[in-house]
Length: 132
Image (cartoon, rainbow, N blue to C red; front, top):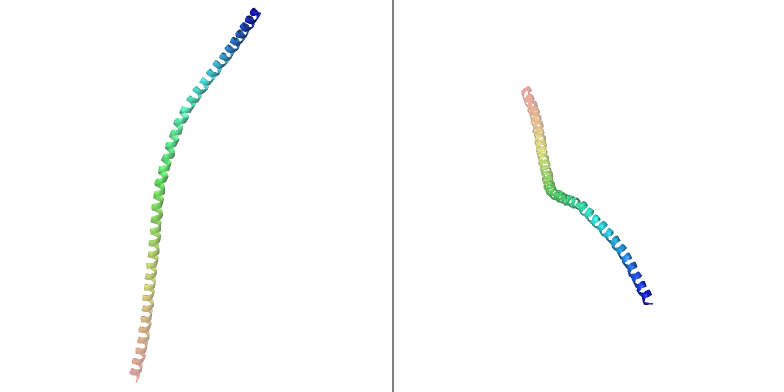
């Protein structure tokens, strides 16, 4: 019975060693595949990270340019506002000049009409007095 028990224990140990060796071989294959995956991932990530850094630099550059453009647009809108106010002032001044010139021309027309009427009346009076 001792020999049978020792034989069973020996058989169990041999089966356990065979299973252990199989597990170790599979584990070795898995570790090798995992290393290859990590290497591949590392090689593909390096250019991606470099490209991402370049993209971030470009985005930062564009943002800086947008800030400058925004400032320029603020200056431009202020200048356009000033131009609009100046045009309004010039328009008002032109209106005053037109009114002034209109007043001068109407005043001159009244004076000319008055002078004409006075000359006509004077001529009639002179003719009447000469004929008498």
